[in-house]
Amino acid sequence: MNFKYFSLIITLFALMFSYSTLYSQQSNIIEENTLSTEKGKTLTISTFAGTIDITTWDKNEVSVKVTGNNTADEMMIFDMSSTSTGVKIDGQKKSDFKKKSYNVNINYDIKVPADYNIDAFTGGGEISVSNLTGSVKVNTSGGNITTNNITGNISGSTAGGNVTITKNTGTLDISTQGGNIKAEGFNGKVTVSTMGGNLVLTGTGGTVNGHTGGGNITLDFSGKNEGIELSTMAGNIKLNLPSDIDADADISTLVGKIDTDFASADNGKLSSFLKTTINAGGNKLKCTTSAGNISVNKK
Image (cartoon, rainbow, N blue to C red; front, side, top):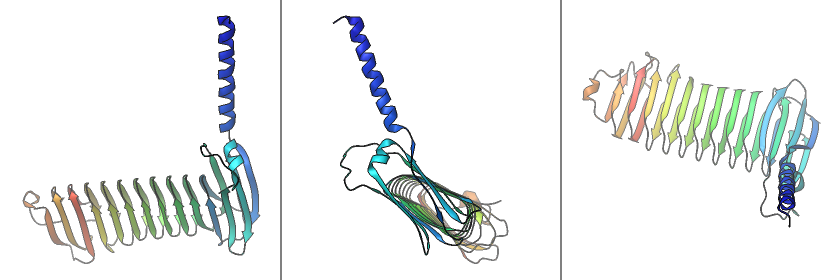
């Protein structure tokens, strides 16, 4: 065969393959719906896979747009309905979908009333919720969790991803099996944990409990001490606290040093264990690391 024609055939096959790949990955609208509801009710969404992005608007309706590639269109089936408690969305894999190997891309773009509750689960993907007044419960088997400007309690978990919470008024109870947790502008009780990642916490109000299996912890806290407990198996702990905070401090590190400008003792003579009363004393301030340094200082 003439080399020129052989090269042309190879080029045509390459173009056909590229087009086929592009076609299979392009994003299309798979499902679109608008459902009537009332403020104060709950969006319940459960999906086999996919990224969920929830924002708000000034209508008593829930708008849902699902986009994805052609594989998603082939494999997924959706059920959306208004109920007595709010709106329910269910996205599951079709029972007759037999492909064992596939690349699926699914995105849920959802708008809810500003006064609404969220209960969201995805088997694989990120979840984000913003500008909402109501409780937020989010769980993903693999992906990041992001919330912004929430007035209400937040709870949830991810099996493998980072968590970013910005400006939350209410209780925060969140965990990740393998990622960092960052909570900025919290106002309320905080309980956060990660099996392997850093904790960065900034806020006020309520008790603060933070635990990591392997990472650093930073807490910048304002307001009255209702109880603070932080621990890491391998990492440093750094606290910035109001100069007039009242606390009974219990600080320890197995391998590392302690630095604080609250204690009357000379920091150069501090051991790896320190118990002291800060100002008038009161609720506990407990920091523990197995291997790392601890600093507890005034703002």
